[in-house]
Amino acid sequence: MRGTDRDEILEQVLDFLGGFLDEDGADVRPDAGYVLDSLAVVELVTFLEERFGLTLERPDLDFMETPNGVVDLILAKGAAGS
Image (cartoon, rainbow, N blue to C red; front, side):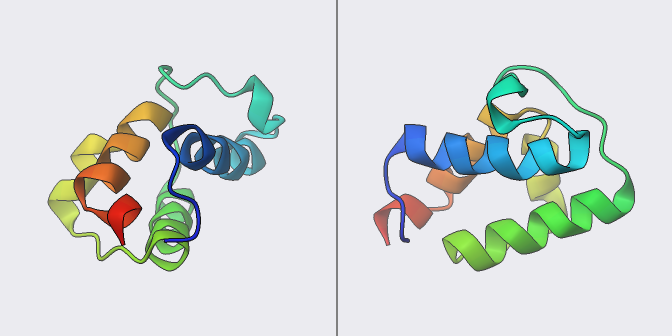
């Protein structure tokens, strides 16, 4: 993985989500839940798989309710250690 620090991963996730929410990544709250349409979810999954070298499955989506949840998923999948 190219960025291994939790804060760095979170920043990347917030920036990516900000694009869908028409907000600057700095305005996206890490613990807030955001509603994404199905296309946005597909694009988020694709981003995570490509950026962090993950293979995500349907049950993984349950952990993606907040930006912090997305980061926890990335770290749990071991991407930060690769």
